[in-house]
Image (cartoon, rainbow, N blue to C red; front, side, top):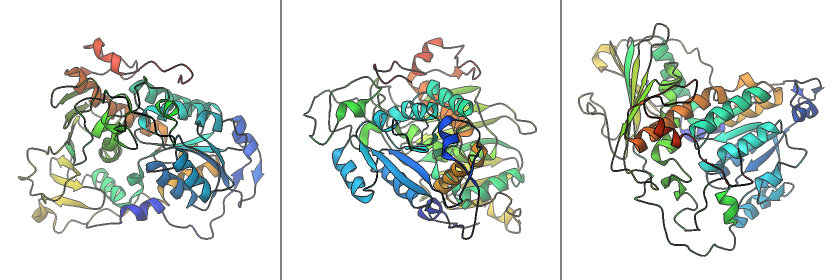
Length: 441
């Protein structure tokens, strides 16, 4: 149970030599209907990209790297990024405004790699046009958006995938198999810690000249407008509530995905959080979040706790963990402990499990996170992706509720069915926000 594969390997996936499959005609996809035409197995998926650099650039290269797509359209608010991507894909039409791009008629599917605050509006627009969608994590900027996107994906029956690429790794699969095989007995608590930090005391107040290569108003999109400041771009927007969701929003969809998957979690019943004094504009330096989940079938209630900004579980040293394991997940069972991160997993106490034989692998290895989505699109099979929105939507809701609990300073009782907080209705202001005209959800 040592190291499995590195991150780049699993994102790329493996070639499926000799595999043939039937694909649906694009006319049916565009109309949002069930496939009624059988086409050549050599046909490729026409994909458009919202964003072309940084994380979006990785999505562009990894999607194209499947060998199963045509890059037909590119959009970016940065002319420099757009020009560089356009040189790589000269046949793709170029846009600064993804709303204009989606008017292009030959698009089958859309990859959304924009900042958090534009995930939902871009994804919703694509789904309503009958396009399949791959969207980066967190799926949305607010809880209301996550629920809306989940429902739209179900309504239009599109193939979807959230960009939690580590979900495709073999190590996560082997860890889930151990949990489901009851290797450490019933699990009543899980601890997740992450060394990443995205924080700011407050948003910048000084207006700076907009660089000539940036279409800043398009970048702001649906969010409340704040004058341009270089602190926002290209990646530091994650530090500010207006555009990002801090460390929790950036990383929790990756790390809490593992217990979410292994323990069949969906909607928490209570959420609380602690951290430094709350800023109305900047995300915190550290945070500890507690989610409480009810029993699921024979599985007992479980408390899931998140730590970031250098915080770790109180029993970290007692558990005998390597101090260099800066991020990870610890499942605490009645009969032992199971640690995992992206690349490794270990059972503790080691002496108790020295002769333990893990279960035979029963979760198929992935062909690659992006390739899994592309192949499902070509087969028009919404059920064929592992991070589709009916899974990643609830995961995103739970993650973002941690920020709501932190910003309100209260333990929240969560009514998931109605998106209500009965014991703290004032906290509901953080479930949604008003969009600028022309950028409505």
